Amino acid sequence: MKFLLKNEKTVYSKTRTILRAVLLIVLAVMLPAAYLLPRMLITGNMAEFYSEVLFPFLSFVPMALSGVFMISLTEAFVVLGSVALIVLLVLFAVKCFILGFKCDMRHLLHFVYKVARNVLIIAIIGALMFECMHGINYNRKSVIERMHLYGDTRPLEDYQQTLLWSYIGMITARNKLGQDYNGVTHMISNFDTAVYDANIAVSTVSIYYDLGMSENYVRAKPVALSRLWSYTEIVGVYDPFLGESNINTDYMDVLHTPITICHEISHARGYASETDANTIAVLSCINSERPDFQYAGYYYIFVRLLGKVTDYEQHEGAASVDYLSSPEIAGVIRDTKAYERYRELFNDGPIADFIAGFSEDVNNAFLESNGQEGGTDTYVVPYDTFVEYYCRCIRDDA
Image (cartoon, rainbow, N blue to C red):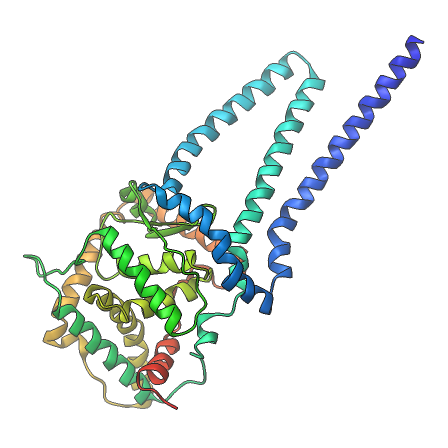
């Protein structure tokens, strides 16, 4: 009788061990499936429907909860979560050491199993949340496609006219702004007001050009550790789990901060692609009523086109305008140098270089893993996009 009971317990123990192993294998298979399948299945018109109709409802709850708090919840979770993770890893190692020291292999394996099971379940939930809040939006039609801002290379005259248009817009906008005793201009409002106006600007562009963006208000948050962020060259981060946009506010540079705020809001409003987010950000800025936003938008286009137009003129043997020698652009150059001096504070020494390089590599790997060929290069909007925009939307070509 005792032999039979012992045999039954052995069989039950082996069966339970097999079932646990099978469960771990199933969970391990489910993890990549949770990350890959939604984007593989929801494409084309389904992706458009999801991004325009379903995403605004799904993102409303986390964004509303995040908006209740003035601080960056993302930053709080990262800091506190990192500490908690270190503590849990230490406790895990200690527990394993104690059980191993006691040669209690049965309890050790059971403990490792429970930890692995829980980690896989959390990772699967996280992967599904990421896809719902960000990943599927990679499959929607791009801004360039929706606005028909693509085509064959246009003649030199179109490039020159676009460059002149951006130059005039940049100079006109800056002339409406004040400047400090160093001759450097700054943002015209505090951060919260800038975020409010950025939401209006993004909504205006979305509605006018039928971009199908979510109308949820995005309360972008300033990051308390912005000074440390500057070593990584990170200026903004969208947290898809909380629907929260986080901005580096260590130096609210008028040439870049408006673009960054609108860029992160564009992610939260349903465009995952970096090219799309930057395109929307630039268009939002130049169409904003704020001169500092206009200045940043036209500056982006001018800098993006200047070298290309110069090369094009040299290739065609055409005369070129020396914009950089114009007295009108002196203020813009001062603003640019002020930003460069700020960046030089964080580019001194091998440690700073390592941090910046590591951050760049991680971001590049993240973008590549999400199907963004070129990685961090996708942040740069193709110069042809702005030429097409000028010709179709400003000059109003038929």
